[in-house]
Length: 283
Ligand code: 3HC
Figure (spheres, protein in one colour):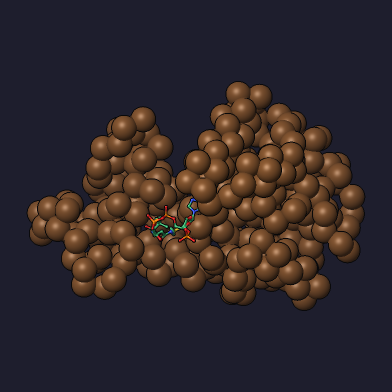
């Protein structure tokens, strides 16, 4: 199948970033979210980022207009029913994702491929709510999706080789580097990354060092582009907690989320998106 049209479910940070990347690569994109308001906000952020690129002289205005014209928006899953490829990027809640895939399975053509940008939830389990488990896989983009090179392609228990190959082709057309892994909690990326973030929160919680010193140590000592606490704020503390809960439930004690992380999420300190996390951000 020649993939031309991509339906992206969820217009938040990840969905919006993926939509931009797909549209830049010449795909027809339908960006969906549950309300007109959410889709409008998500689309406005894409336009804002592209306008900044024009002002900085990184792209021509005509190029910005071309990218924007590749994106249509909708507040209904019906709007994505003729997509060749679905990339789901909604909140990290298994029941919500399952409900979406169930609905899409009923309205999309048999041959279209379903993927999820989940950070940790079982691909095999999500695929089971559909009749197309061979055409179902993980397509895990990193944040910010328009900058980071990796797409972690996750093979579920029954994903076909053909599906993996088609997804790799799409990721490459998006100028990303796809790397295939098998389905397992947190895959490779978050199974390795999240314990580091969690341990850095424990260091802060136990008074081992200040937030700035924890971040400086990893930037200066391990050459990370940003410190783990800054990174947690970028990813979203709620997402970090959701991923750690899956790892903790399915793997071992060492993934137990730090009480400080739980407290911050409960108190609405979610990182950049809420204006405050380990650091403060101007809205
Ligand atoms: N569209 C396209 N390209 C853009 C862009 C946009 N809107 N905005 C920036 N870029 C390009 C820039 O032009 C630049 O490219 P160039 O070097 O060719 O000019 C490049 O992207 C980097 O942009 P910036 O200069 O703005 O970025 P910084 O150098 O300040 O780095 C950062 C910012 C990329 C966020 C860097 O700090 C970093 O890599 N941090 C770590 C991020 C990370 O680890 N992400 C993974 C998180 S885990 C995850 O997502 C998994 C999930 O499941 C939880």
